[in-house]
Image 1 (cartoon, rainbow, N blue to C red):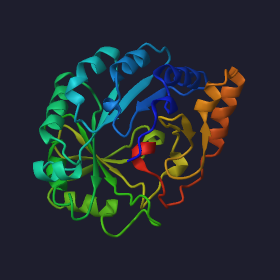
Image 2: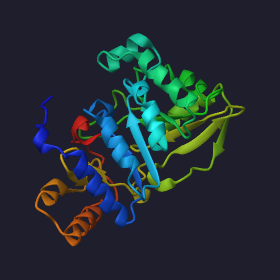
Image 3: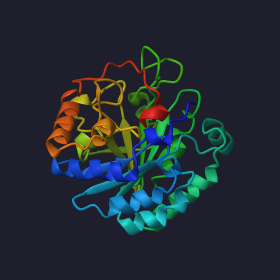
Image 4: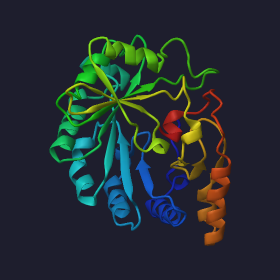
Length: 289
């Protein structure tokens, strides 16, 4: 892994400047993602800076949960709305292998803290992988029986291959629903806020929480996607997989007018493809999950 030099990534002040301008353009929902955002030095400082920004209606974070329990209190203090926690196995040895040394207990303790502190709409993101965690789908689904969580199954994308639906690990969402539905009565629920995450939502009868199913590969939802992605090195991307990007960092560091910044956002939005190419040639730890 080639590390990026500190001078080549956005400062926290630059990130907040971009957020403030985005709000002026009508963007009110923001998410910190990664890589792993909680690994960045002094991330608490950025969290507090964003918590002070007027006009943010929804502030969320996606984390792998390894360091989560160290930050749940500050997240609650600043008014963080939602958390997405990535978790691909509930077996210690398998989790350690997938995460290259992660401690499953740290993640589970963080999830317990989130529930205890009263966060709402918390999601557990499970990337479904054939031969790796397909024997755990029911166990993941059972997490919702007594916990106010949404366990969200996401189709595996074979990044850096010609076809995202690579046969080695890919499982279509219809198969995942069938596996869980064999021993559970699934009740279909309306999908809220379609543009920010097109998932099919279900509940196991009698469960406290919900199940979500995201079919980004077998049934792309590009026509309802309303996201732009800002990378750590200042690129405003129109799409995770394809489309194009605008270099906001270079613009910011040349004393732009508000009109120049606005035009940069418009250019990025206009680059958004009607549907992604279906071919993944991006490095996920660089552009984020």
